[in-house]
Image (cartoon, rainbow, N blue to C red; front, side):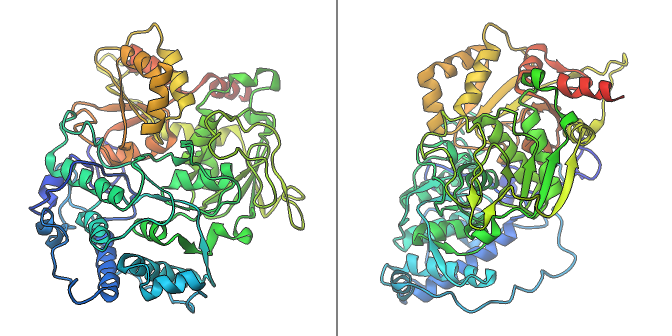
Length: 580
């Protein structure tokens, strides 16, 4: 358990800046470039075993001069020989759990997929040892999924560029050593540090140096130094029907659901192999049959304000609804009805996707009136126009055999106001309201955490407007995570200057899901956020209490230096009173 966190909360990963010096082996030296964020389920031991497997593939693909004992890089040789001690936790968080039983047996393999001429040439080594090792891993992944063939992808997004263990850096440097190059346009996810400011932020060198070296290694492989968990905000965003190989859960859900592109949730290391080969297993969300909804979620009319007051629904609605829909969907693809008359912006859909990806295993959803259909010719935003697009109106298309809306598929679940209120309370401090000695339930706030996932231009515009002419409380820090591309656009629009005048700090390259102290102030007790994803993870990641509210509520907390006993938005609270 974590001191100060709700009962049952456990530390699922080692936060950067909290204990990495003790856990990393000696010799972590390297470049000064980049690093990223990772799923809680992928621990150090998993990464280490994956890197070892990659070593075997690479060694089988190369000549005797590239023996396994060779140094990967003179500056990181010592770290490659070390391993993370799974029994050592970050200071103050207790030992990391050790599995009580052996890991499950590996899945049975199907027959190898049929390969085209280009794929067969890679497998022979015609494109070099790195591509040969990568295609072998992609083929093995296809066998575990029963894929009969591979599918060409137009681009990749590598999520494995965050520093999880020594294996993360070892894997990337090995690819560089073997002369690897990405074969399709490739973007990089957020790193473990802000590569340009980690020293200023007092991140320990034993974290900042290898995290930066990891980002540099992927750039040397030909990837673009985008360092964002929101690649759909770039001008390279894929269009409807494009097969891509993306990692990062919120990005995968957005690509599949809002853009109509096709990708599975690709794990660390496999995403890099897809980038090197330009091939992915023809399975999961790449297939039309796996994209059709098997569950219907219908929002009750009384869960929204009347149509004439619907503008009162603030931006807390979309992440809250995404959180509830994800919990109901699980691994099933849902069709969500009842939102046809509600306007949704890109930042709204981005927040929905992040929350949905937090609680659901499914890689996509369909919202009637807001997302393209699984198949056909949807009216999706053209690649590169997503920043300015609202994606409003009925844009579900027909698929072969009839419309996706011809019937309500699978089970039908109703979503009412009670479910939204319960989810809000769970995210907003878990319903627990601490009181001070005077009995006041007003709670002091030390940190406002925005940009999880990375803030869009629209969100920064709204934030600048909310802070204009106001003064931040001296005891509160406001930190906004943003990708480099959007940061450039926001600077050109003057939003960065306005936000910095208010006292906000904008950080790029990194992600809240990988940050602890000192970016999270050591004295911080309460964090306020407008992200359902971060409100869900922050207690376990930081040991702090999380409060969830709208963007306007976050700014108000920054001005007041405190938050009230309930941050419920008016539309949620007022409807609750009406129901009673």
